[in-house]
Image (cartoon, rainbow, N blue to C red; front, side, top):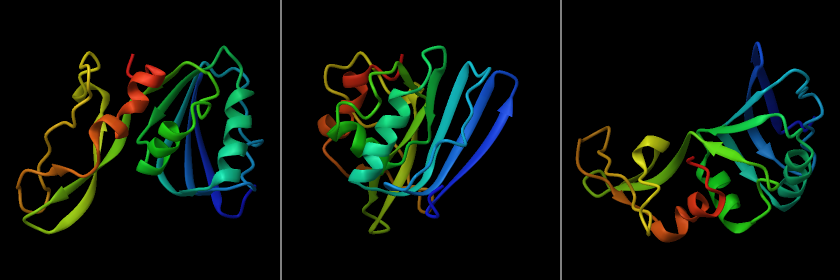
Length: 165
């Protein structure tokens, strides 16, 4: 296992929730994850601090080799993970994936501060021709936040993978 990536597993019957914490690099070892008897494989990406090109290669190999009987659910995808989904069409290994939630960059003009906001799939209108960022308020001052990226680019993973279905 990579000394920079911690993998925490919690199983409940046929459901396995895995938390990835740290850096996804070329040394990441996913072999400790057993999917025997697992129907729902859920991954929490909220604490990924880095993913580099060799990390993408290791990840794609792992995800491509997942058994087809596992339903893959991604939760709390960090902006780093969303950027990888947007840049590399094979990032999800041609698997059917559902994204339950992800972080998106926002900016509070009143506080002069950037922040990542957790977006749940219910907040997105998947039928929009061009995806729009949901409204959000600053947790510190209550002011309306501004989406701090180009929405059509940032949310392109939604249409590309059909991940909100």
